[in-house]
Amino acid sequence: MEFVHKSVLLEEVIEGLAIKPEGIYVDGTVGGAGHSSEIAKRLKGKGRLYCFDQDPEALAAAEKRLESYKERVTLIRANFENAVGILKERGETGVDGILLDLGVSSYQLDNGERGFSYRSDAPLDMRMDPEAGKSAGDIVNSAEEGELFRILRDYGEERFAGKIARSIVEARKKQPIKTTFELNAIIKSAIPAKMRQDKHPSKRSFQALRIACNRELEVLEASLEPMIGFLNEGGRFCVISFHSLEDRIVKSTFRREEHPCTCPADFPKCVCGKQPKGFCVNRKAIVAGDAELEENERAHSAKLRIFEKKTSDGGEQ
Ligand SMILES: C[S@@+](CC[C@H](N)C(=O)[O-])C[C@H]1O[C@@H](n2cnc3c(N)ncnc32)[C@H](O)[C@@H]1O
Image (cartoon, rainbow, N blue to C red; front, side, top):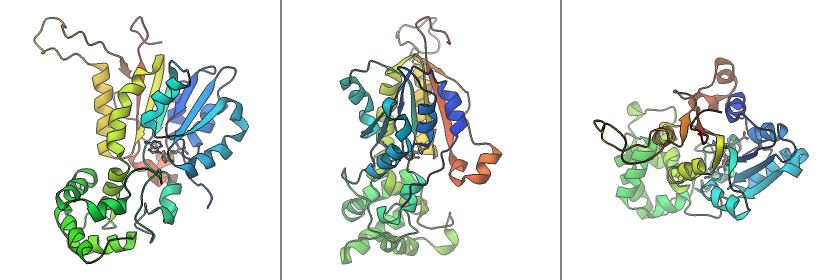
């Protein structure tokens, strides 16, 4: 199957990274290398791009797409939560820009066999790294009812989380739930037809299970601060999120790094000593314009936030 994925907010990301031709850049979610090929194209001399992805199929597609820039690109199969550690082991002391384009690619969703989509019948897997952690099937068949409820409510914002969790537990007493279509039938039976929130009754539950089995929010939460710490002065960090749970984490981390002082508001001056690490380049998240919205369905929920690491004199570059 050909790797098809239309990059979201491409121009905005390239402008946001303010690429220095001889700088060091990181794409933590290379996917089909749509963003990476535009970054690589702008590098020269000592300029270098490190591309991470935890999905071996994505990395293979990225390798092909980046073939003509291979002397300045390094592809690494790893979770981006380990990127800073891996780069330090390779002798890097800081980078000039980082991109995270979160979630799954269209290729992963469209490739029915991976179990990401409720539209194709496949084993319930949903892992971006097919060798790491628990699959969606493991969670559905072994998590306690309370845990399933929490996953569906918190990661899917599913109104019928309780009913669906109960139906899953009842169904698996008879036999393990193995496929996406078996899970679809269970979810459908748990939601009253006239109360369905979305076009497809499984939409929220599948999103929730995907987030849980890939530990998406945990990984994001753990990665942002170390990545900001690893930026060189004036370095830029671009993060594209696709749902409110992710965006909330990005927004609050960037704000905290911009205003870290924890002193009570009525203190005449700061005594906690926490210094800002930089600033948010835009007050509001950047969203896709009309032309992009018309031609890319995924762009509708995309939000880009950009952080710039402060320089030693504290100012903008
Ligand atoms: C939205 S796609 C990126 C598309 C890419 N920017 C492009 O323009 O072609 C997200 C990619 O990030 C990968 N990914 C998601 N979370 C990851 C993580 N925590 N660590 C490494 N890769 C991750 C997925 O496997 C997927 O290939």
